[in-house]
Length: 122
Image (cartoon, rainbow, N blue to C red; front, side, top):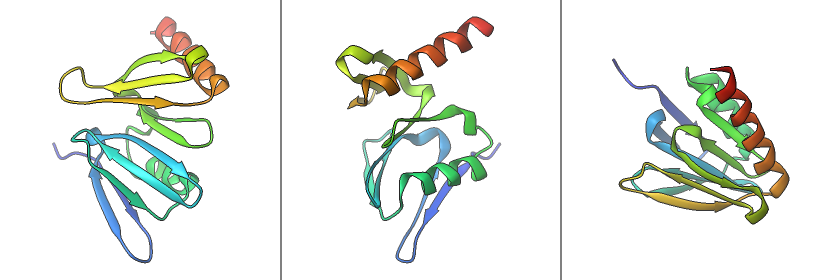
């Protein structure tokens, strides 16, 4: 079975990434950094809400990707650790990569609560 791909494009460039390789997208204003499990980071001139819309429209596993606060979208498959009081989140495959990121305390608390509720319902 062929993987789902996320295609992000603007007037100058196009990025095509297999969904399972996308770890997170972080944003700063009009720019978004797209980070993959091989540690590659590409900066594209797109606001995060545009990336978020593309994920929802293109990927059949869109519920796997969660927006955290104003500047971060993560692939929950790689979520290893959340500590709202330290504003820390760790994304890793427990083998080849580990990303230590920061997000707002409120956003991480909401994510933690959301994940706890989902685990109880399964």
